[in-house]
Image (cartoon, rainbow over all chains, first blue to last red; front, side, top):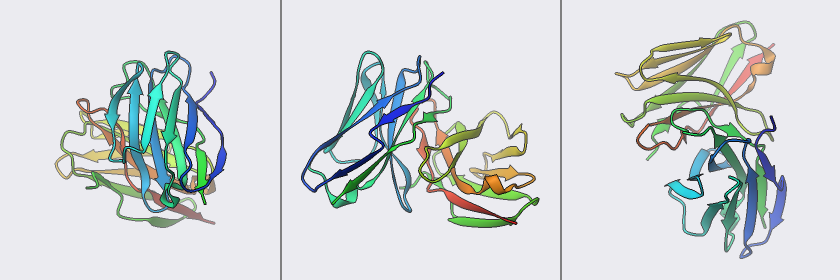
Length: 114
Length: 112
């Protein structure tokens, strides 16, 4: 079974631009969550999608948005990029039902804003 | 407000000894707890979990202990091996609000 796939792996953008990251969950998984990892801050929860609906949202500004498609693939968008958005963005998928189950992570997209 | 706290940013342990990683949480609605391991440039890998109805769960060299009254959990690795050197994240979720919340991580160094 293929794991969680994130594309691209690396990205360099300039301030003010916008970026879209993609995540393909494990086959059969309908829950997709996004996290931001920065040094010293651990994994900060961005949002979770389940069956194309945003089910949970973290404390990030509205510049961070996402969506999920009918095949469970998810995209995350960040508009008007700031230097502080440089981070590793991780996507995780969970099994159908998705209550009290572990999440499986992709390798992440390393975003650098210059 | 950090709901899951890992107060030790790093820990060094001799190979073959026991590694103990600690985690505290503040949200009493959490009822499921997880530990993840992360190597550089890779995504976190699930290690072990525990439901709030238990106080211990064991899987090979890894054991997680949960003390609900103290809102504390710990991960024991016995014996510690060089490949255990990584960052370990504690995480928690609650059935009513199912998002998984992570701590900031503890970097474990296994010394030869």
